[in-house]
Each structure stands twice: as C-alpha cells, then as structure tokens.
Length: 103
Length: 481
Image 1 (cartoon, rainbow over the protein chains, first blue to last red):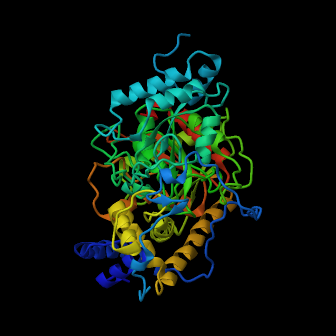
Image 2: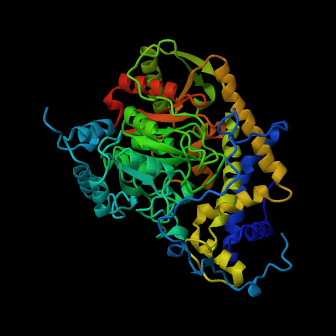
Image 3: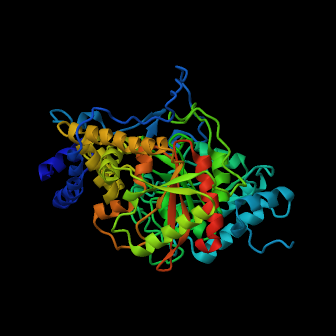
C-alpha cells in the first residue's frame, strides 16, 4: 500500500499538524519508503491473537476508584501558555473551523 | 591507600562507599563532574551531550544529600524526557523549550533518596525518536571516543556523559534500543529492564506499550547498583508498574556452570561484518571459559520485528504526542482559530522525524488501514513474543547476540529514514517481547567500541547480570574504552 498527496493532507489534518504544500511531495516519498517495508507482514497468516502490553501476567492490580493527585512544586500558570482564573485559555471557539470537517 | 585524584572513574559503588566513610564529600564530587564537563566540552560547543545543568543547584543538593544512601554523593545525569523540578525537561524538542516540570519522576526521587546528585539533563533525539541523537532540536550530540561520530540514540547524550566521565551512572529511556545501542557505540554498559520493572511515572511518553527507563553505567556492577535503587513497585503512580519487589541484581559469582546460553542464528546473518563476528566469537569463548554452555537457537520472526515496531511505535506516539497542542504547556504559535493554533504550534514545534512518525502513526490507525497495519502488527508481535517463550521453554537461560551490526557511524552519514531504523535491528525484539536485555562492551572494531547483547526471560535480570558480570570479568578491562 502507498500514500498519495491527498492521503498525507488528510492524515496531517487528523493529526492536527500543519504541513506546508511544498513539503507534501517529500513526505509522500518518505512515508512510502517506510511503508514498503511493512508489506513483509502480509506473508504472515492472520492469527487473530494480538499481543497485549502486560507488566505482569499474574494480573494487574486495580487501583482504588478515587482521585489521586501529585503535589505540584509550581503552579500551572508558570508553564501554561495562557491561563486565567485557573483555566487554560484557547482562541475563541467562534473561530473554530471544525464545522463540516471530514474525519 | 591514597585517595584517587579523580573519583568518577572509580565507579558509583566506590564513590558511595567513600562518601559514606567521609573520605570524599558530595560537593567535591559535584565539582569534579562540572570540572570534567568543562574539560571535555560537554556543552553545545563540544560533545553537546548536556542540555541543561546548574552548578550552584547541584552543589546545594550535595550539601543536603543523605550520606547513608546506596548512591551517596554519586553524580548522575538524566535523559531530558525524565521529569525533574530543578532543571528543564525539553525532550530535545522546541515544543517544550524551557519547560520545567512541576513534579519529579519516580526514578528522580529514588535517586535523590539514595543520595545521588543530579548534575545535568542529557541531549536526546526529539521525544526519543531516533538512533543517533542527530534528531535533537538542539543539535547533534557527539561520541566522546571519536567526535566526528554519533553517540547513538536516542539516549545518546546520557551515554556520552558516562563515557566522557561526567558521571558514573546516567538514565536513558528505551523504546526500541535507545539505551543498548548508544551504550555499545560509547563503550559502556546499557540496561533495558523488563517492561514494568522500573516505574515510568514522570517519563514523557513516546510509545506506551514499549517504553522503559534504562540505565547506563561504566561497569556491570554500577549498572546493577543503579537498577537496585530504581526497580520496584510503583503501581499507585504508574499503571504499567509490576506489583512485585525488586530482586537482588548484584552478585559476587562469576561462575556460569550450568547456564545455557542461546545463540540465535537470525542475529548472526551472513551480512554481519567479519570484525563484528570475531568480537562476538571472542565474547562467546569468554562465556564458555566461565562454564556456560552454548546452544544454537532460532527466533524465526526476527525479520518482522522492525516492520512491527515501526507500525506500533508511531501509532502510539501519534496518540501520546496529541497532548502537545499549545494549550496546557510548552510552545504556542497563534493561528486561525483554535484549529489553526493547534496546527501552527505542532508544525513549528515538532522536528522532521517526529512529524514523520506522527503522520505514519495516524495513517496506520486511520479508518481502512487499522486492520492491515496496526492489528496485523499486534498479531505478529504476539508471534515474536512466542519465539522467546519457546526458547526459554527449551531450557535456555539467556541469549547472546551483537548489540549492533557495526560501530558508531559518522555524523550525517545516514539520511534515509528507514536506513536509520535499521540501527535498531538487533534491539527492537526485546522491547516488543517485554524482556530484559543489556549491552556490555566486548571489544573494538576499527578502533571503535562494540557491544554484546544479553537477553533474558521476563524478570530474569538477576541471571542476565550474572552472565554480564562473567563476560566483563573474563574479557577484562581492555574490552572497555
């Protein structure tokens, strides 16, 4: 399988990464150069058994169903780009352009 | 016995013992580390292995360190994706430039409690994506043994810091070989633990089913000492932490009688350069001399490990790095509305390799491609894991392989992304199978250090260290740099 310029535009949109038009051709070449090596997996029959990350097969302990918090040594507004009254500020949602977006 | 002029080359165990006895103070050791950093030019004008450090802060920490700890007064360097409250945590990325964490990673706290002193945060490939530390937003790090060459990656700064003598111990992170490969390139020991053995709380996530914090040391014993301090249950903070106590890794035994070591044929292909093969044969002879029995074995899905890894790791990275959007921390670039801000911030904040992997990961998870790529990769990952369990079930206690197919390459020598991925050829399988593995210096090829890899069953670190101790002792110091 190979990606096209339209595919790269689409996945860049899904990933919320701005990709300049002049970079698209290069990314198509690079991604296809990687993806061609993935075709090797096609020769393995489907098993239906997928690996699960598992720290201890004996069973992971379930934590208590309660909120835990880590004490912070400095307040959030010292590292947040923009904060007011304890809230992270973002651009006005009126300008949000997701309406009608295909994803 | 007169005190050595330099303590750091003596190793962590000797340093801690001397500090506990009052022979040397932690502040003297901090000064030695910073003097050494200046001498070898550890900053951007030289090795570029340290991204941030603060001599006064380290000296203050040294004055108040607990003198009785296992790492009393030992200077340590942490990779820049491990959260610390005293130095920045940029992950080698512009998007987190200047970011200082409001909390400490569990490993940072454990080191501190054991008496270790943080002397610097180490350069790395951006968000740990790379095999050479050339993909750092702050410039390539250099190999102290030959500064025209890479130190390996992604934890190249940590490896270079230990090899250059800034600290006897450093921490890195491993997703596909990012500790073992730079350890091999820099002529030191690098350990990737069993998935879940060392807490990842405070490690900035790359690929959550593969990430581990790993240890660099000049010697096997120093690496075991650090592992002893770091391992253990942290389930209250890290959902992937294994709920079991840390075993004992340090041992005086150098005898391998009764130990069966497998030599997997897939790791010794015809294409393996003859000088690499010669160094491996020498290491195998050394292990046999210590009483080990060798057996030819097969891990038949090894050739699929790289394609599997480069589907799963980017898929998980595309999800984990979604949090870097200019809202809660890090860089923000204004754009047209909220969406424009997201895209502008991530476009300017991420470098080329991170962008490539986010796009690749988003693609393999997207509608229509998930089954063909991601689900398939997870199925083959299960087969790769089974290869290992089959070998252990046949009576093999550990495996021996080369860590890399070649020594460190020249900076700028590899430009094709997949060719760079091939650097992980011998290391990714251990991450996919969640088993522990470590690289130990076994000699030199073209005057450059190379490593041998020891792989053990899950939570089999004690046996892995036993083999590593025997190898290091039998080969002698000339195998080190």
